[in-house]
Image (tube, rainbow, N blue to C red; front, top):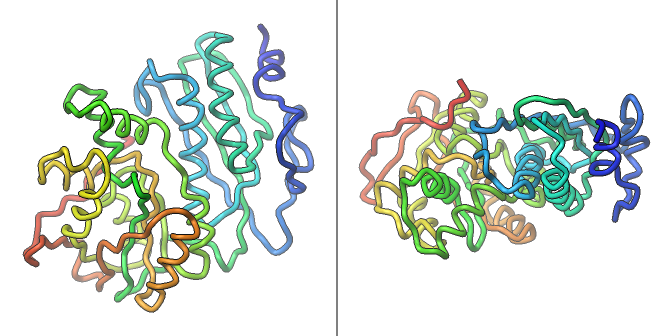
Length: 329
């Protein structure tokens, strides 16, 4: 099967269940053509996933298709942007039709659920790697950035009734043979690692409310540092709030307390939204999260830059903090 037949068979779709008037030309030409909505700017992000680095070589292709797009959509969520479309650069060791069918199904299923069509890309031969560039739009004045946090702001992390940060790290530990869980907890942890849920609805709901925002991909403390540096502030985190959040959700209660806090603080691949907002917006934040089908858990406060990043235990005593997360190099 040649390159163009591969593209036609698995990545060209004429029967999309939705219509984007912003996409004026998609797959099949030298470039895609996009027209952002009036008064909005483009939000663009790229993520690459490499076999053996970002995913296990034996991961189910449908799962991989989902995750490859999900991690990019999560960046749009962090900016408060609405998806317009995405491009895919796919490097394959061979044109395995069964693999391609499953991969494309996972990719398109998530794309359809967020009205985000594939609009172009490239395929080539080589070690398995996936690069996706996602495009969205947002009113420039409402884009959620990392640089707006101010001393006195509350710090929040998103969660759902069943999901919270740290569970994906537990899933990784299961895959590495470092952790044993019940069958139910194991399935949940692996699902969180392999099939994250981008919080796009929450990102849209936080427009005009959050002062700073990003998605947690490399670990809570590591990613929080990006907000602190961009905003020129420090942070005081409440470990009791983090542990209370974890205690009411699957997987985490099976961990010892120190291990649980470690996974909460340093685990990656969560793709929850970490954001700040003035205390005066607390009620509006709760309502916005509820509309988005999630919860916003207050886990600390923004302080002056000179105070750095600190964490207190349940008795108000300081805990050792090391902002170590996933490192690409």
